[in-house]
Amino acid sequence: KGISEFVNQDTEEMRAAVAARSGKTLEVIEGPLMSGMNVVGDLFGAGKMFLPQVIKSARVMKKAVAYLLPFMEEEKRENLKAMGVDPDATAADGDDDDGPFGFLSKTLTPSGGALARL
Image 1: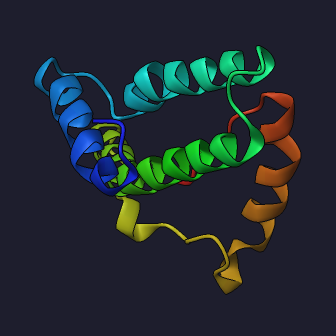
Image 2: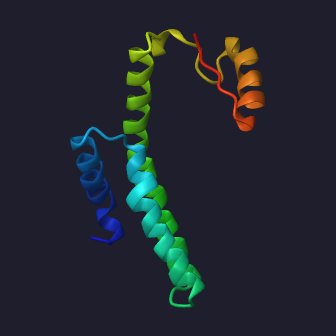
């Protein structure tokens, strides 16, 4: 609908459509939401949209992503379970016993490395 008061409803419609075809929630962000932000960028670059409108668009995008985060976290948990990892039996970020994992995670993941909690 394109109105910020309907962002959760619109986002849920997109998420449900993606889920109906067994897609991942991230596809909503990478697909329609990013396409919308590309349009905003093009309009801004052409002088047809001004900074306050760009900021409002970014806030709506942020709200849509915040709505999708719990669904993405649940998909992540399900993927871990499918790999045989119990997501509840691992140290969470910030736990006292998270020190070495946190250090390695911050060191390896920016350079393309992967680290899994076991």
